[in-house]
Image (cartoon, rainbow, N blue to C red; front, side):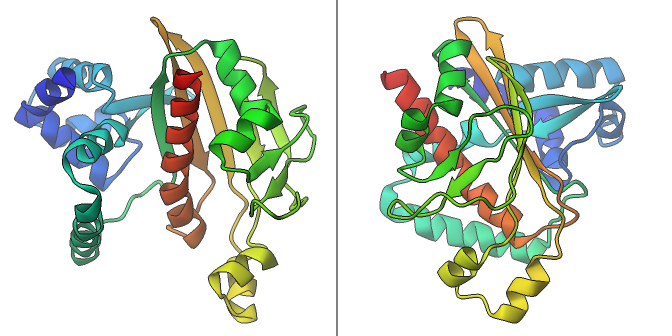
Length: 258
C-alpha cells in the first residue's frame, strides 16, 4: 500500500486520477490538457500511477489509452471501512455522483488485477468448469472456448445452462480470451421484475463483449478485464460494474489460496 499512498500524495497525480474519473480512456495528449506541466512530466506521473496499479493502459490502434483502476483504492476501503459502514458510505457516494451528474464519454468497464500465480494456471481458472464454478459461486459460463463456439450461461446455482447467443471471439491459451455478452433475457426480467415493455426496450441495446488479457508481471500475472461495446450508461453496464469486481476478487482469492 505504500506505493499507492506515495502516488496519491502528489497533487498533479491526483488531478490525473480526477480527470480519468470524469472521463476514462484518455490518451496522453488529452490528459496533458488538464495540467500546466510538460508532456514529459505527465508521462512520469502516469508511470508512477501505473506502477501503483492506480492506472492501467490499453492499446487501441496507434493510441495508448489510460484507465483509472479503482481496485487498489477499493482494497484500502475494505481494510478501514467496517462492514456495517459500507452501505452508508456507498449511499453517500451514490448521492454525490447523482448530484454531480458525472458521465463518461467511453462507457465501458476496465479492471486490472495482479495475481500470484502462473499464466497457465490463470488460463485454467478462466476456462475450466470446476474453477469457474468456484469463483462464480456455482453460476457463470460454460464452453469449449474455441473461436466461434457458444458460451452457455447459468444465472442461478440451481438453474440450467442457457444458450443466450454468446460466442467465443478469440481464444489464445495463456494470453487472451474474448467472447460476446448476452442480451437482456426473460430470466433476467423475472429476476429484476421488469415489465414486458421495459424488456423489449432494453433488448434494443447493442451486444457487448468481454476480454481477458493475461501477461507476466515479475513473480505475478497481470489480468486486464475489459467489457466494452456500450453506446451509453446502461443497466447492463451498471450491473457489470457491480458484479465483475466481486467475481474477479473471488478468482484472485481462489488462485492465491490454491
